[in-house]
Image (cartoon, rainbow, N blue to C red; front, side):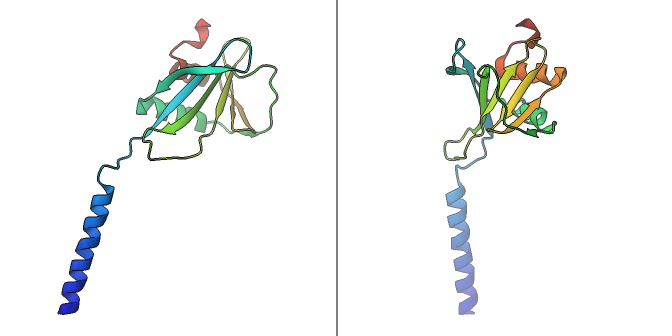
Amino acid sequence: MKFTKTLFVSLAMILFVITGCSNGIEDEGENIEVEKRIGNENKYEEFKEINDNKQVQKVKDILDEFDWENAKVDMERPADYHFWFRFKSSKMSAKAVLYEIWISPNKDKVEVVRGENQYVQLNVENSTDLFEILTGEKLSDL
């Protein structure tokens, strides 16, 4: 009988500790931080932060739709934009993967490099959607 009471009290205390420690911790999701290239140099400035969970998920869906090529690319100019996903909660820390975006000369598609060696060229529709979410501008208006 004493063992049962001790076990019950111990389990109750563990439950209280777990509940107390998790109080205030919530999954706030992710956001996207976007930087825009300044001039023709390899310098970037903060451009936009995307906090809407639906837009963040849409960007992820677009990027996950394609088969990324494992290739180290050497573009003739620096990327037009940089972006990465970041957890909104400062308590979460993870190594961010840099995405770099180049706008095609025809201004109808974008090419994306993920990390250092993954490359994809998006189709017109996904290029338009991705660019509009990341910049708030229409790709066709450039």
